[in-house]
Length: 396
Image 1 (tube, rainbow, N blue to C red):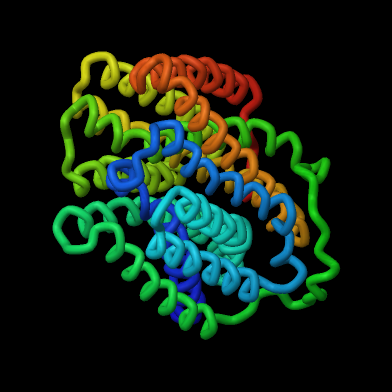
Image 2 (tube, rainbow, N blue to C red):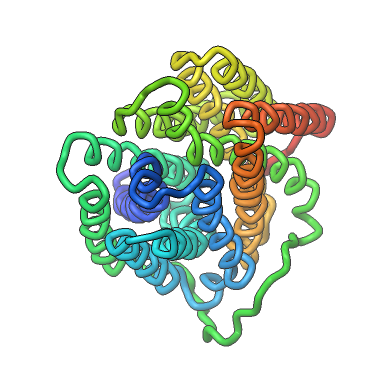
């Protein structure tokens, strides 16, 4: 046990760096209302600004999702921290929409470099025999970091001066500290190759992984789609429909979904990966129903309940999917396959969110939300039934 302590310490430090990067990607969430007031753009533009981030993630995953397999984990993660810092600088300089687009794009490039590489790095830093616990660390710091972003920004925006500046200054300090930590951690890729050997990859997985990958990707898509809508439009809904103009409260509501995801991931150890995927889909269906009730009757309590249940469902599905895919992937393709899983997940974050933004003008935000809920309910039902008929098996 004592011999495992240094390994777990390194694993947790790597996870902390991961969390800092992901917090930066959701930092602007409770601030979009302030930017709307300052720059005067529509709800559609809010969703487009949000989705630019997802397109940045997908672009990096497709063009360089396997880069860390070649050049090493640390160089890729240091580059990701650099893009995270550039994103904060863009928001600090923002005097119009172009700066917001640039900031979100830089944030997306950062997350794209981190999602696959940092997940695998955390797994590789863990001691032997700790794969299951390390998978939880990787997924928990991912979701926990995403939750800390809106919570931190909401608190600073509500209770401190310079609401559109101080959150990003704090993030720059955290990024600098993370870079120092990362430089002190070991490299885990033993046989490295030059960067020019990295080639853009089309979405695809090795044949032996496909049976696991399909249902895992479906569950990930639905969970991330629901999170995307929560993150992009719930602060506006809270302000316009529920008269909640406290930035700390709107940040907390979004954060609750991500924190509940960590709780859902903890449950995977109890229920098993095979059952966690269909159970996650069932919880997501319930969350969609609660969100429909919140939109219909304008109840904050239902918004909070939906956030919590959605988080648990997404956590069950996300950790189950990641465990299944990582366990079935050959070591030399693991980062690339996990990156492909995240391409599907971030497609779920971006496309439905833009759809809600497009529909919000003719139908209103509540009507657009109900259309989204109906579409996701159909998809999550199909996914759940598929997973019940063809349970995922994972090697332990």
